[in-house]
Length: 187
Image (cartoon, rainbow, N blue to C red; front, side, top):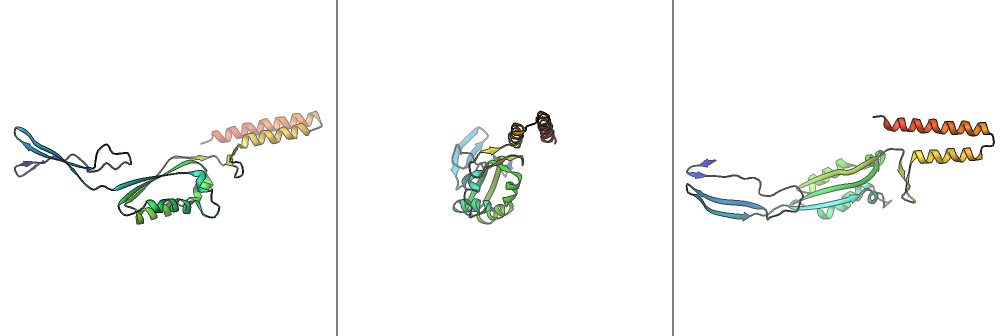
């Protein structure tokens, strides 16, 4: 671009805003150009927005029974937020659909809009579990509907006294497992 008798080069933003670690100090390059080439080239540093990252594992959200998962997130965000800070909130782990709906992401976004320069919610590391698979609050181990169905059917088959009853229970178990597989494969 030409401004009067001066060529002006605009290269881009003064700060890379992608939550990566910057390679250089934020700023811009001031170039002096002439017909015969470059006269000067100076990097001019500028004050930059502060960027903070907060990663929260889903299991941390229900660790404290006294507060809601949304309140837990807000408590962790409060020390990071101010008007000169961009914050990236990264949610990681597995949730059931009902647990996901307990998160009030709109309330978290509103808080970010009011308290931060910007708030980005990254849920790319969040995965939803099928409702059949839930986490035991006591042991932290996952229960599978399929495994529970097999265990229950095998218990019933083991205590059955009649051979015909055992065959009928085994056939029912196989039908239920087939129906479960078919249900999981539906879109």
